[in-house]
Image: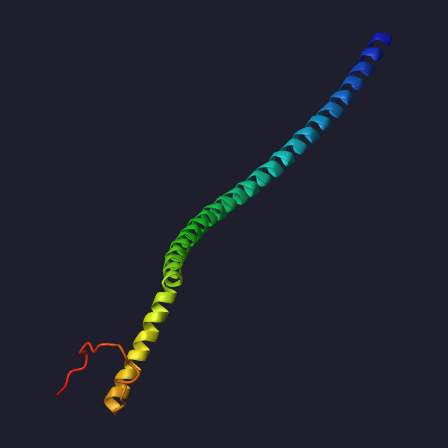
Amino acid sequence: DLLVADLDKEMQEAKVVEKAAQADYEKLMADASEKRAEDSKLLTEKSTIKANTEDALQEEKGRKADFTKSLMEAGEYLQSVHGECDWLLKNFAARKDARAGESDALANAKAVLSGADYSLLQVGATRTGNLRRR
């Protein structure tokens, strides 16, 4: 009788331990399932973020290429303007003298046509015959 009672008691304890273990197992499986769902959701979100970031990167690379091309064109234009400016600075005095000479020549021609006499002012100068008589 004592052996049967001990056996029943051990069976009862084993059932209680097994129920507790089953409950722990079910809780562990539920937690794992919840964790997998969260991880799946997080993975989807991160994949979306990664795709958006890659799209933005490609767009920025295109903008950079356009901007670089624009900078190169501006540099080429600046270089050509610099060359023209250097030429203007180099030849400024000669061009200024030529303009002054042309202005004086036009003023003299106008005065001659108006009847002024420059023969006294041009002592020692020879006539080149630039004016035609009609």
